[in-house]
Image 1 (tube, helix red, strand yellow):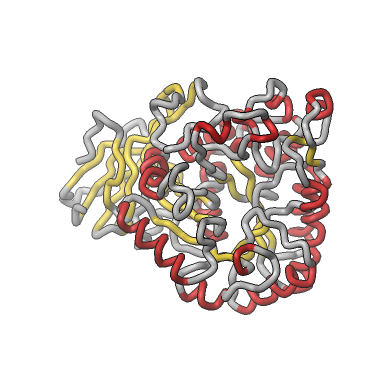
Image 2: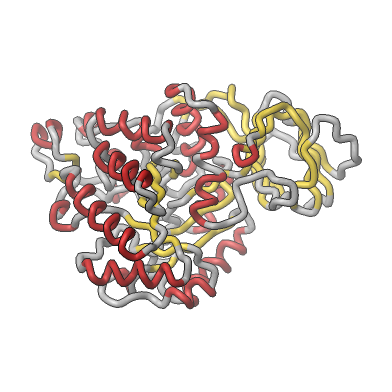
Length: 431
């Protein structure tokens, strides 16, 4: 790592500090040292960012890396490469690994493997209950001591409301943010598509929007009762977004995110039984999709995440209900986020906040910013570049995405982790 690195003449956007201007960025010993258009200090290395955007490295709140336990789908090493290729420098890994992240030993294992890759800042989300079974509380104090700042039961609903309440109360005593994925297990049982005109016509087992809102209503009530700080993962319905807005107006410590693909796809994309569109929660109506977009613009939803779930080819090679849910999404997070900004006419700085400083704030970490003295995680990308997403181009071990063959706009040229270049576009110099 160079002692002093200068990124020159880029459009520097730092949403956390309301910066959006052509400037130079000086990095010294892995931290941001200065931002000034007239920096003339000598540098060991220089990156010419003319015509490009320089922003904090992206922070992704939810990415399954499949390790440990499902290495036939992906590994930390393979997905770290995909992440930095997409400008992502920090990933949060949900606890539904095998073994489950419910002990400090598993947290340490993940950290060691991430450090071995040398590419990514990996955060483990601790389990809310032991083995995610919803019966016994996990040792949250030990998980926090091991480095967890958040806890979750992943996509495994806690059916017992008393246990859910006690879990929130226990998390609150350690000032841990509770991640919830609202889903009523009974209403959703056996479903694979949104309950609507498309699932009815195709004869697919359906999941009503009420499966999300019923579970969310309970958890918001428990949030108010327990005083826990709650982050709601993967909103999919207009009704749920309205509930979050009301909870925030009432002063509850609640935040929410949306998976980036939910901003573009709807139940109609399932109409040809495309297994790449099998996700959980399912793609809902176009009205729901548009409501999620509005919720991002008005700040009800603060975070866009990848909800990355890589699969081997066979996992999607079956009749739609029998396929596994999920999209490989690390490499499309940035271009789709920028596409949303263009289509919605939301200021670019506001949109980039949804993948930088806002998720970092939810995680309680000092990342996602280019403040003086901050760790220099940096993404440099060309907003004018166009490229086509193909399986051959993807670095993720999982090629399962409905966006294959589509043209993407914006391409990362450099990704820096703590001042060290961990990715640069082939053919592009990095020094």
